Image 1 (spheres, rainbow, N blue to C red):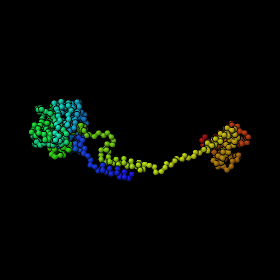
Image 2 (image 1 turned 30 degrees about the vertical axis):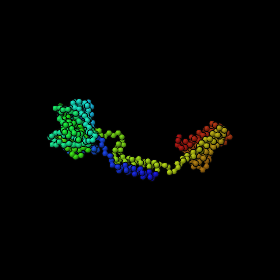
Image 3 (image 1 turned 120 degrees about the vertical axis):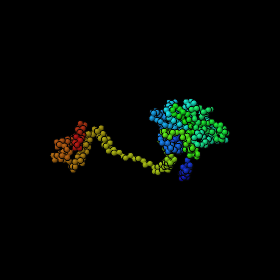
Image 4 (image 1 turned 90 degrees about the vertical axis):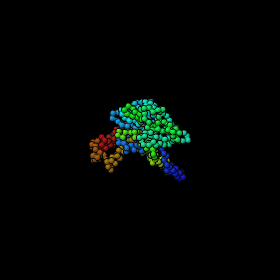
Length: 400
């Protein structure tokens, strides 16, 4: 048994000391430190932009009063699908002179149809792996550097045969070591800007450009900074936190224990302790002591049985004698008489001690003497005797 405990303890120690696996889930949540969280990006915005507001409600609710919301509304997630009513409200707000920025790997068809756009997927060759090169094409940014990202099995781009007038291309993407890209023949536009009413819409198919993993890997932060240059610093920046793949949804009270390493192992150790206690200490160390019921007082039942026997056999004289004897014993013990004598002094003394009138006491004792002198006693006389004795006792105890 000791060997089992040592083995279990060793397994728990190895499991606890094992390096934590990297979480590659694309959460895009503003306070997540995992590779595809956006904590670094949000901290940078707080330093560089004067007015940044985190929005946790759906756009349909946030833009209910459009006149009070002015600025740039930013959506960053793997997938952003507004729905018909919400999309209409967002586009209506944008057309009033505001800016809409959406970085998403996929766009809903209704948005693409409204902007007259189409998307396609770009795959690299098997020998070239999963590397794609991203580039910002605006010459005012001062460089034409390529930024490599090697974690995508494919990437999305806008398939434009020609650049329509209202659309400005801000960035391109190409598969690394692609011969067409090397010759400058690739037209895979993945960041575009389009006027919409009095406002503008900027779309990017590369949301991972804003994640911790991409920004912290030199020199990629220059690419992200280049995209931010299209945001007006003088206006309020609204960052969406509703459309996030990794936003917290608590479905169980055990969530916090099972998602924090220290709490999780404390919970497991507590369960192990309970199991060990059941195995080693749960068994009784002594036989159960049998419960012995105390003997019942059968005196009253015995007395009733004997009385019934006398009564059924017609021994009323004997019953009366026992009744009188018990009563006289009661008087001696309760009122502290050494002897009982039928004379005036005794009657007065007993009357004063028992809260009775002298006449009542004298009447009772004369009836007792009368019954003792009789050879036979009727049932009526026996009942009267019992009635007089019970009446005396009740009055003596203050119950009358």
